[in-house]
Image (cartoon, rainbow, N blue to C red):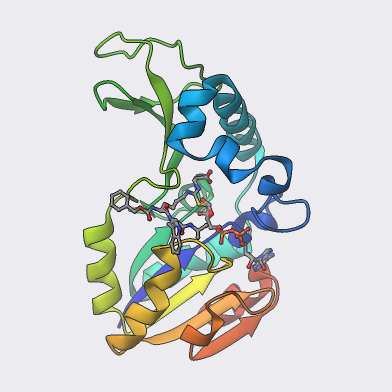
Length: 222
Ligand code: BV8
């Protein structure tokens, strides 16, 4: 049986990492337009690097929770494709391999001039020279609004091959990820939503399991 899983900020909430749209969410402190668009980076690279440097520090100090570990267990028994909107490395640190980071990763830096990618230092600044072209054009390797998410071809294939599609801890507000359940469902997958409450695209799911992921996901897997 092929299972395709999409995770969002909610799976890392119990590891202490802020989600985006909760009352204390990341976006409450910053308008999305101010920190997660190419225009924002062009306008104020230091503000954007500051936002991501702070998140990189917090993510490095966080630990995987039982929901991350349950997905490692799931991969032992089924053919699993794990897609995450998250830019932390908690799936990898729990033991997952081949995690598809469709919105990029805090762990990587990208050269805006030559597209070279390398492992990000703890704190980055726009004047850091690119190790390959030496231009001061360093940005986080993050997919911002208006940019094409990574690995889409592989993701669409995994949605079409899925017998089960499960979305865990995502509010269903951001596309194309918010359209994955509808696409998988049209191709015959049973769609499950694991969330605290109904997401914006809850109608696309066959079953909605409400509760903290650290409880609901291990219960589903075991
Ligand atoms: C693109 C960067 C095209 C990394 C992010 C109008 C209609 C439709 C689409 C659009 C539109 N206008 C613009 C668009 C496109 C736009 C979009 O969708 N905008 C939205 C706002 C309408 N999308 C894009 O721009 C995307 N690109 O479309 O490109 C294109 C085509 C050709 C060529 C070029 C381009 C790019 C989107 C990626 C943006 N980058 N982040 C970072 O900083 O982290 S998105 C950002 O939100 C996060 O990365 C995250 O991935 C994403 C979604 O957030 P969630 O993960 O869902 O988090 P959230 O807080 O919202 O929800 C958490 C959930 O968990 C909640 O439901 C909560 O209840 C639950 N929860 C909390 N605790 C727990 C829990 N559940 C269980 N247990 C718990 N303990």
